[in-house]
Image 1 (tube, rainbow, N blue to C red):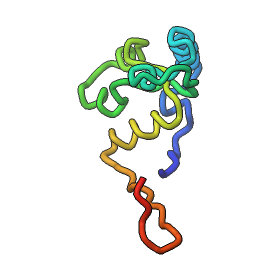
Image 2 (image 1 turned 90 degrees about the vertical axis):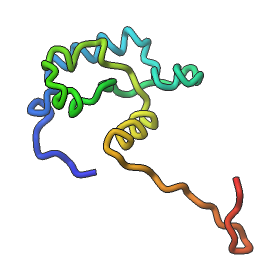
Image 3 (image 1 turned 135 degrees about the horizontal axis):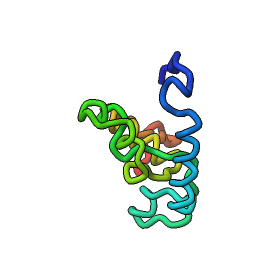
Length: 108
């Protein structure tokens, strides 16, 4: 992933974002909401994610207030955030294949 040349504040993550982030983390109990929906309980969230991505919100011409409204935000863990971001960007990861001692792939 290429790093943005814009600062955190230029990308819309300044003091106002920090306040909203805190509200969402408290509302969600610091737990990953994607994991909870999948039946995995107690997974700690590290970030707050836009349910509808900022890019999609821009395409839909949502206001900044609607984009960053807590109803469009969720607490999310690292692995879930990575999968969601890749899916939104149309990327997929190739499956890791384990090779056995005989040189053939090991079925999992």
